[in-house]
Amino acid sequence: MQFKDYYQILGVNRDAAVEDIKKAYRKLARKYHPDISKEANAEARMKEVNEAYAVLSDTEKRAAYDQLGRGYRPGQEFHPPPDWDAGFEFSTTDAGDFGDFFSQLFGRMGAGRRQTGPFASGGSVHGRGEDHHAKVLLDIEDAFSGATRQVSLRVPRLDAQGRVGLDNRTLNVKIPKGVHEGQIIRLAGQGAPGLGSGTPGDLLLEVHFNPHKSLRVDAANLHMSLPVSPWEAALGAAISVNLFSTVLKVRIPAGTQSGQQLRLRGQGIPSTPPGDLFLDIQVLLPPATSAKAREIYETMARELAFDPRADRRI
Image (tube, rainbow, N blue to C red; front, side, top):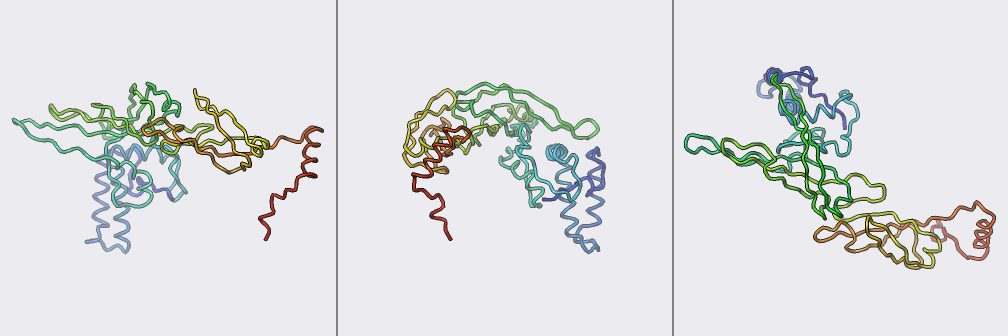
């Protein structure tokens, strides 16, 4: 995917105020609107201009784009970094009918729904505030024990000159035991303020997990690589697997091969229902670095009628 410089498309500086962006858009819209333009590529250029304006005229989209776009040039190969939007607080936005670049950046920010509009009562305007959304990264351990964690969020804002900036806010969040990948934690009243006497919206935190050195998360399921010795794999064995504060007893069937998978039902994230733990078997060979080890391997080579490539002959 190629990087698009929305500032260059509209012909404005990166620190342009909102009013400058509007003026630039109106000028380009008059030039490229397909109904009146004589330009040969008017329709394509108008679509590009609309996409750029959709980002730069929206405080949240522009703040996110500014964070991601530093150091990139137009046409340069670009892929959003994993979890680029973690800790970024936003209200519901619409990805619209734009290109792949736009959708890759902002498509997931349209997951929620906007609140109903304000209503009049006794000459006053009241309305519930919008819900806000944020993706947060937690440690997998928190799902097994529950915890209270400090969560730091970046909140886009406009300054007095109409330029975009980011504020930070920190919340103490209770993480329930059994929380799983993609689950929403709702914090009542932590969204946008209401209008008049309307109640504030909620903050919806979408849970994701930090990478773990030994575990891979798939919803409520966990995957772990399990090294075993050749004799454990060949003869079968009962071994122990440590999963945080729990010690699991695992039976390795005789004749187990590398690449096979064992499934421990209910031993994944303790959600409702609990996930499963998948153990990917990896048979590891002891190094032949001593005379005794070499002797054992040489004996096996002589006495075991074993050809690992017997079924792969062409």
